[in-house]
Length: 211
Image (cartoon, rainbow, N blue to C red):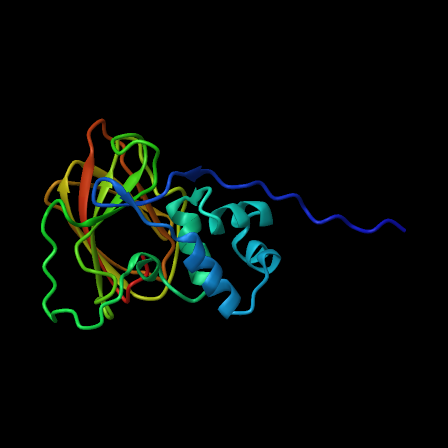
């Protein structure tokens, strides 16, 4: 009797490492590996849970590739942390009021070119200080998308600053434009894309922090 083979999984698309500011890079692989080992999970167990290959996860942990935003969210959810923790710095002794000037904020990139197809998150609140809420400006390039839907605990709201956004929540699509706002329960499957030919910018706030 032949043993059944495990279905072959394909490695999800990857993209270059996120950046802080304009030129310095932040490696997240070590933090992901530490979180996985702390949780007592093997690469195979984590790969099975998020739906990718061991090889791909190994490359992520060694900072050779960076997963898509959707895949990164699946990984941190499985590890019971959030994306903000990966990019946060030690806040010990910091001022209780956090000021983040334009040009100094952290950008999380999900595409190879800053203005190429994809999504870039601009942090408005320091991950080291945010405990109850999180705020970002989502920069969505023309035809850029969230690469599928995600769902998690919490609530979210947003306000379209520029451009248009095709917003999908629980199987229903909404077309949003400049000046429109939205609110929804994060437990509903949700994703989005920019159907336009100019960049869309969306102020996005969610609680608790999940990105």
